[in-house]
Amino acid sequence: MSETTAPVTSPSSAPTTQVASARSVSARGRRARIALRALQVVLALFYGFASALPKLIAHPSAAESFDRLGWGSAGMYTIGLLELAGAVALLVPVLQSVAAMGLGALMVGAFIVQVAVFDGQYAATPLILIVPLTLIAWARRGHNADLLRLVRRRA
Image (tube, rainbow, N blue to C red):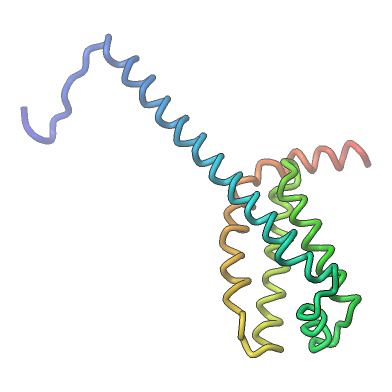
């Protein structure tokens, strides 16, 4: 038999091979879903505690940044509430994709502000956060149809 010729399998071994292959695919899929869920939890904790909380309690560092922007406390509280809402929505199955897109849009705005106002001092942070948010938005995009059905049913 040459190296390019595939070995012939007997009909009795084919179902066993297919079952083993299906198990490995489902195990990989399960691990991927768990990893994605863990990523969502980590991002939700980051946005809820490390990003939104300082804005919502008017921590001096956050207040100083928003005063420098000229947005004052109203802008700071608004951004903090949007981040907190996004963090909570990352944990709600039907809202996961939309939350990731919304937080991604906030990160685009944060990048622009960092470059335009703060001379790019921390511009890499929002860019780094856009990567996992994009992954979540894409991987959970199937939930968008569920959300649309819910919205249409209530309208």
